[in-house]
Length: 333
Image (cartoon, rainbow, N blue to C red; front, side, top):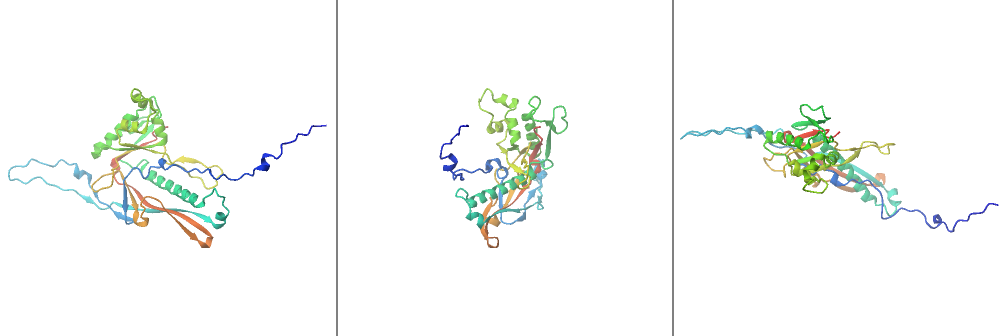
């Protein structure tokens, strides 16, 4: 006769019923540090959605026209031209999340539907803003010159060996080439380098870069170290991720918003008259008073029996001086 195995009573399932924890939940909320759209170019608050801004003809400020003046003679003279055809247009971007009354009434204590909706909307608009920035600035055929990374042996014209090739590439020399190009046609030394995160990770392990610091620092190569080496005031790392797949897709895919590239550019420290800058961000503060920030509002949708949380932002990422920047495409393999 088989022995009956008796289980200890009561069992663990009898004394505990699974319930949601109130001090932990899981949501994939990206850090704002990974988004750089609000950090690169000066922010210009504007009262009107569209308007014009003045641009000076660059060549008028570089000509050598002063001449020697004789006694009782006229001095050499000249002038400069102004262009009033440049415009900005702040588009309005918005996204909402509805909170049905039935969902609110049935929520467990750990779920704060208003907080979650606000964070959800903010992420959506943050991703949209970053993608617009990338489309306008972090791409080929935007700036004064494009350099294209290629495999060793295929270098020609404006191409360079990809920085992920640790045996043949020269990232310090390539950045110098871009820096001198900008200085040579504008008189301004670029002060900002935007790196896709993949590129940064490759550069900080590049033997040529490590070798320059091996006798002075035992630290891992940092952003500040790279900035000093590349002779720019700051380096910004673009690390935002987005998904292009539909909601509840069977196999979601995720991509870098800015991938495998680098932008070397002069960005004015602040907006002001007669100050060139690779770009300006025009933010329609007259709409919400918040400018580039996201305006969040909560209002009742009685016919749907729900509360609506809605976010809105209005801006234009404007490339205003293409000769102030160069773009390094496919900087790594």
